[in-house]
Amino acid sequence: MRNQIRERIGLLLLYLVLIAGAVIVITPLLYAFATSLKTSAEVFAVPVRWLPTVAHFDNYPAALKQGPFGRYFFNSLFVATGVTLLNLLTCSLAGYSFAKHRYHGRDILFGFVLATMMVPIASMVIPLFLVVKAAGWLNSYWGLIIPAGTSALGIFLMRQNILAIPDDLIAAARIDGCGELAIYWRIVLPLIGPALSSLAIFIFMWNWDSFLWPMVVATRDQYWTLPIGIAGFESSYGTNYPQMMAVANMAMAPVLVVFFILQRNFIEAMALSGIKE
Image (cartoon, rainbow, N blue to C red):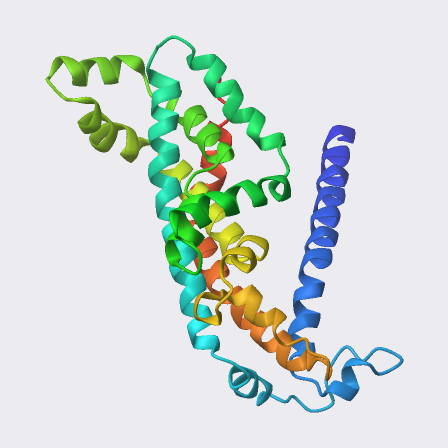
């Protein structure tokens, strides 16, 4: 009886912690949505007004008229999708190589890949910029997509999941005459679907929100992504925060859609990534 009471108390405490965490995460999002419906005076009102007196939904169409946000949305979607697809290809190929092929220096090379995760991104901006400039990719989609075409975290995640694939299955495919690309396409990829979904969520989210690299590479507004366009709301004449929040709320929609589509496989991939050799 006492054990059952302790278990129920433990579950109750766990639920309370989870509810508190959910409130902490959701509150800023709800406040951002409420702010997008306020007037500028209500944003700076003291004491803080959590809800608008009158919901100004016209802030949304008015915000879109402040700049070519249709173009910015397209650029962000195109770049984030291109980077995500390129990462799924390169990271899965590298992960397959590190997990199922034996060659001299494999573990050392994998160690170097993991070591790059400890290098601050800001320290690589100048070398990457010089490479992109030499390639003639400034103010182009190539310059926005190619430098972000792979990631050490993605390679690690793919390797850990591919390790769970039985070696006998791959050996049987080789005996049947399958080449390495056929094994990769017909056997490996279908079995690591959850991991690919998780990686797609991470990469799409990171690149949809990316600000520093697009700002460095794209000096023409023709190639600006949405974060740079939102930053353009700030001017020497002041910032219309309700309209800025309106655009920011619309910018969250694609990320949420991608997450809800792929979330089924997310937890499964995280569990499989901890499997060791």
